[in-house]
Length: 170
Image (cartoon, rainbow, N blue to C red; front, side, top):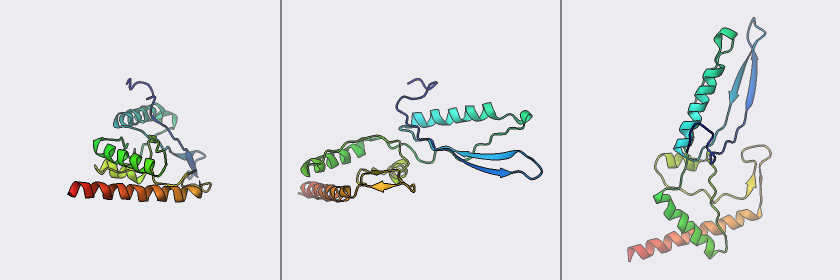
């Protein structure tokens, strides 16, 4: 992939929040911008970080009274499906078939606890949440019927793991 242009599979879920504070003795205002960027792999993470650095350098113009300082960075690593995780993916798909649920995998470039666990080398699956949208906002909603559906899937996965471990022990 050419990293000089935006990756085609990199999802940018950007939220800009502003807070204004008048500076004492000055009519200028300080502006704080926060941007939420999600990436699907480490290459995209490096690309995003380099682009943010370039933008910051371009707009850092102290001679014009504008300074740009970067704080923080990407704090949720990508969670690609790797060899260890692919075993769990297959297990969940088999369990889904047993309870007549079609499992669809969709890379979200998310910022879930699963991403943090994966960055520590711990395989995990995060497809057990209920259906809904606008997560972590005052507009968040959940489809109540999906709670039972996901519970049934969780029990089916537990049964699959139990069957697998019983077969392995014999």
